[in-house]
Length: 309
Image (cartoon, rainbow, N blue to C red):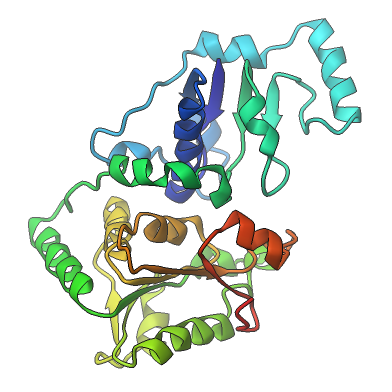
């Protein structure tokens, strides 16, 4: 059996679930561990999270028992010694050989594993690109909790389908905090967004941009022209999942270095879609263009200087 930890925000949870579906497709017996969302873990978090995969309608998954998890995570004296040897050989970041910890962008060996507990965020498109059609069908959006806003979203989604619509996700907030800016900041730069928008405008001068961000004041200051931009500011709290739904109806998607907007683009079923992302996800992670084009096939990659690579 493989047990896969679910952790982080909605975008990360969706990526872990995507790997779960891919492992099932490979014939593995896989279950999910949701204990990261327990009160004992969350009380120590700077930004507490909730399990949000349950927001999707009838999403199928199997949760492991406490005993099944302990059978993998708890170690005998022999396994502790074996784990230390594995760590010295560079095989794991954990002292437990039954625990596999993500430590690079893509682990090709992950599909050969069995009888192991897996932890990581697995953002790389290459892991589950071939099951994306299945995932698009499985992630079924719920209605907005407010009927009037649900209708507003439905009308807007229909409009997006008919026009040259492009979603623009701008992640600020926690990305600007001192503890995050060094790793995550200045990647989805103003130069990045200007270049990405110009890419679409050069192809279709009538492109309309839909701005998705939690920093509505910033959006109103920078994207005030209502003929060119629409700021989506009514899907909040647990209804933020509706932003993913709307993004998926746009002809083009401009993503921040954020797993949330990655999924707005990934769930886009349009045959004419064009997906844009930052070359880098993090400042402490090497992103070679030739490798990134392999890992993110058919995506348009733009660096922090606004250069399409």
